[in-house]
Image (cartoon, rainbow, N blue to C red; front, side, top):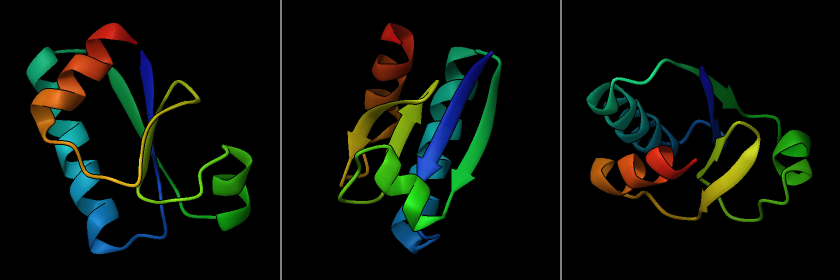
Length: 79
């Protein structure tokens, strides 16, 4: 099971990244657990300076942008 972490304060961009990530995981049919990390101290601990960001199993894969579900599918398939 993959752990998908959305790093951000809960802004509309963060919510859109969460939607796109969930759509990608469902399209791939992979088991996953989604976490939303909103604590700025924890976000900084990931080394993220621009949100929203996506981490897969604790490794940041995207930061500062909202990739479409197709791009997230490629990220998840290679993670």
